[in-house]
Length: 113
Length: 111
Image 1 (cartoon, each protein chain N blue to C red):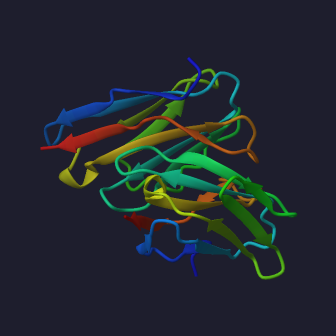
Image 2: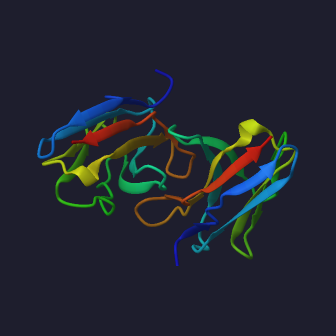
């Protein structure tokens, strides 16, 4: 595909369950970002991957959150034991180079009930 | 002090008005700068890059002032369709995560 693809687009889960969110970046893009956005709020940085370097995990809010990027391409964000405050839109973005502009996927809207 | 700061607004302007947003950044080593637009319940999309010499794209003009560490976005002849949140983005090209997003400035263009 031409753009960043995220799945699922919507996810409703029960409190305490684990969820996995997927991001397919633009082919060839070395940098990948995950952000979280609550309704009416700004982007909250979660994690950054660049090539084979160790990811910058400084934005992950708790140890319930983890992410991996396999083969320098697809990334999965996992939230364990979901809480209601995890409800938000999770956005993935990729860029060709670290200094370049980022392109966003359409996001996954997560609702924890 | 936040690394990238924007006035959250909202800016409520009539159609046809000219409106300007400023954004300040704290890291003097920042390398590249962008304005993104985010519509309600949509993902952010690149509006324009900001070059040292300034750049214009139709009704939109972006300026960079490195000495004072701010960038600006000017929108002329505002349209209803310009209503959105405008995000200032700075690439600091240092530290672990290069891109830093501002919280955004909300614009409402009123008929």
